[in-house]
Image (cartoon, rainbow, N blue to C red; front, side, top):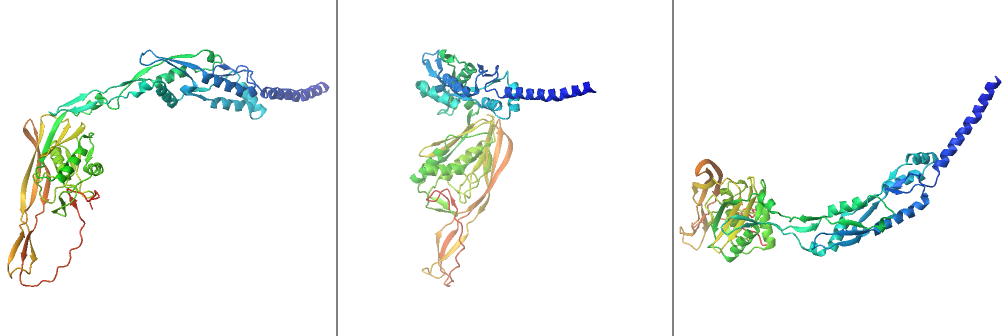
Length: 480
C-alpha cells in the first residue's frame, strides 16, 4: 500500500502545482502590456508595441495621413491640375472597431484578456479611412470656381405662333465626378503606410456631364405632341376692371401642365391670382342678381377653359352653371365659380401630359389645350333648350299711383332648362353621344308698381340668407 500512497501523495502535490503554474502563465500572458506580435492595424504592423505608446503613435499616423499631398491631375485645358492635403479633401478616420479590440485586450480579468490576446494574435484591425462627400464637394467648388459657376440650362418646350410643338435642347455642363474621385482616393488610402507622407498620391480627376434639371427627353416623354382643341370667348363689352381680372387669371393659368390622371382645380388658380395681381371692380352675380362687385370676369376664364376641356373629351369632375344666363357662352356651356361653394375641376384622363395655354387680346380670350389623343377623334357640343321659364311678377305698393294703376318697373327675364350633350366622332362619323348636364337658369322677376287702394300691413322680413358671389370675390379676395 505504501507505493500507492506515495503516488497519491505525489499527484496531490503535482496537480495543484501544475494548475498554479498554468494559471500563472495565463495571467502573465494576459497581463502583457503590448500588442500580440502579429497584430496589425489596416496594414500597419504594431505587434509588440506597448499599449501605452499606441495612442500617441496612432495620432501621429493620422496626422501623417492628413498631411499627405494629393495631386489632382486633370487632362483638360479648361480645368487646371491642383494639389491638396488629404485633410482638406475631407479625410475621415473611424477607429471604433480598433477601440473595441483595445478594450478586449486591456480591460476585464486576466483570463478574459488572455483569451482575447490569443484570439487576436494574428488579427488585422480595421480603421475606416474615407472621404466625406459634403466636404469633398465644397472643396471642389473652391478649387475650380470657374467650372462650377456655369450652370446647366434646362430644355424648353416651345409652342410656335402656328401652334406647332417644338423643343430646344438643354445644355449640360462639365463637372468633376465627385463620387468617382472619392472612390479613387479611398482605394489608395485603404492601408496605413508610415512612409506615405514621403510619397504624394496622384489621382486622375474624373469628369462627368451634369444634365439640366429638365432634359429634352423628359419633355418629349410627356407626349405634349400637338394642339388638341381651343376655345374663345368675346371681351368686347368688358370694362377695364373686368379685363384686368380676366387677363390676370388667364396669366396664372398659362402654361399649367397636368400629369396623366391628375385633377385640375380652379380654386388655387383664383387664390394665386389674387395674391399675384389682385382683383379690380367689375359686376358680379350676388344671390342670383347682377350687382357691382370685385373680381367680375373670373368665370369667363373658367367657362372658356370648360369649353376647351369639353371639346378635348376630358372627364368633368365638378362644374356648375351660372344662376343667370351669360353673354359670352351658349346656355349649358358655362362654368361658374364661388370660393368655398362652387368649383370647377376636371381630370386629365389621357395617357399624356396636358398643357394649358392662354391668349388674351382686347376683344377675346382664347384657351388652348395641347397633349396627345388620336388625331381622327373630335368632339362636338350640342345644347338644347328643354324648357323656358316665364318670369314671375313681383308687385310693389306705390301710394303715389292712382287706385288700380300699375307701372312696370322691370320687365324681368325668362329662365331656361338646358340639356347639353357631347358627341364623339372618329373620322367624321359619330360613334357616341354623352349627356353632360341639365342646367337651370333662374328667371328674373318682372317688377310692377301698383296701388290697389288697400293699405297692406308691412311684410315680415325674410330670413337672412348666406351670400353667394358668382363670377367675383369680396374685397379681401374671398367669397363670404
